[in-house]
Length: 379
Image 1 (cartoon, rainbow, N blue to C red):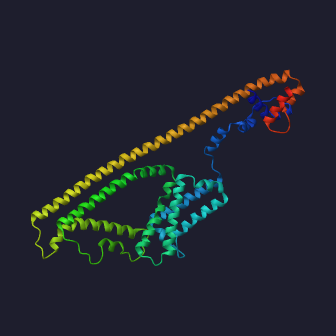
Image 2 (spheres, one colour; image 1 turned 90 degrees about the vertical axis):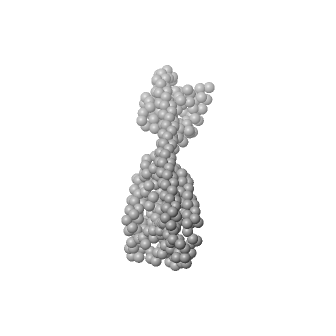
Image 3 (cartoon, helix red, strand yellow; image 1 turned 135 degrees about the horizontal axis):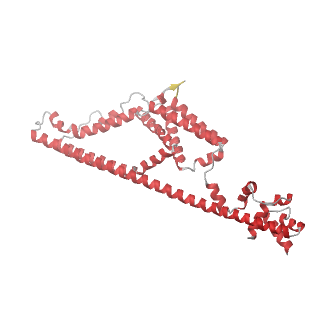
């Protein structure tokens, strides 16, 4: 009780000096934060604050650069050159200069940049893209075209950066990443299944392959004799390798013996057996892919529900803490108002000068020292 009275005296000290009636108004109510517990002040500081005009401008400029860069990548215009410099290089340099300016003029915001999870991932993606882009454009003049295309493919992953800068899209992407292990697991199972049945088919129905000019897929993968925008050459080559593998493992198997003139042609039963084998493989593969799709949908829905539940729980916990602190502040304000009446009674009954001296206290020191001084005078 004495502690609260001392706080009330400290808040209304200027009114007492001027001879006015002490009361709690909007001015001294804001000064209550100096007497609040440290736990409440730390909790208040942890709440999201309104961004400054510089921070709003930098975030807006950041979104503009990233969005335009992604549009140029999708349209294939990032490989166009302006004064012998690619447009993609120009926009990457814009973003690097943006980060440097942010570090110089708003260091407090830049210091918090790395502590946010999605911004940390965005910075890692940006660093990888810059390294690959600089390497393929300035350090890889004598490299093979396929290696250049591979670096271009890695540099183009910055196309996912607009997703990181949008809250709803970021939540959706996290849900997709949550089912990533399931997708990888079943993808490996399908690839292993495919390879196993292709090997079995080659062993059962075909001769050993004779390679004269290198693996067919490798020849297709390294067949790019000119630079193509982004990773078209690499993706086309990878798709060609996969199709050649499937074709060599399935489509060409039943024609391998027929192409060999020294061997008798396949009869109808052998051809029917090979066709039945392929039909069985495709049927089992179709069932596996359907199960894969169902599992992905179920796991994706589960991840979304868990993420929404975690957000709701954290929001409820934060709101409950804020309500408890606000309720405590309201109670303290009511106590201050009740002290006002007691203070009026005390001012009417106590001697004018002595009470004035007790209420004001010493001019030096904080409010706790003035409170201790008033106790000494009473004794």
